[in-house]
Image: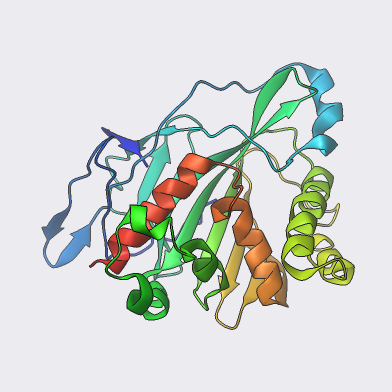
Length: 287
């Protein structure tokens, strides 16, 4: 493996990404072209020690998951030798994130959702990767932000424009904690997404919240390694897919923003991942 430091997954091989980015303070990734095929993307992240709890009593506390606060985690990543152009492997969790999904959405950054159970131990709940369509990013944001640096973007409403723009994006969740139930996921989204809906749209959004959370039915099993895609499509349509099966779609700009705010908003689950994603977006806009 070629090891590098970095800023859920289907079997078909995605096309190589059109852009590469790096975080200078950590590492770089080489980009090579062979026979007209562009290969590989450089990513950046960091790692802190974390553990997967083995104490069975913690399972009873899973419905407490996903408050708005979680410790940021850096992840140590490697490019798989036989698929360097198509995926990035998180060596901390062992999960692989495709560099590109849906033919055109490029991986911008990854993070880890962690949760302290009963104040005793942090567990790794799921790893996530955030993707976006490069052309949509340029079309929606280049005129306003194309000439700005990362530090300058922090003083602007950049994150808000990304979340509210008509940009195809996907948040891919890969379940790390093997005892996580779909009921816990539903309860967690009721709290976290519900808070965002109230923040951005007022209190009269219970029906919208229920429409979203009711997609996570008890019949679905999500063992370790399960993949949940929350995909925002053109027209602000949020499509939910669990292990390759579409379970629902909802047209709502407010709901799309509420979901994205969990990962790239003012109080994200993983702050370092948000910074890596902003760095990647800046690189795309400046190309």
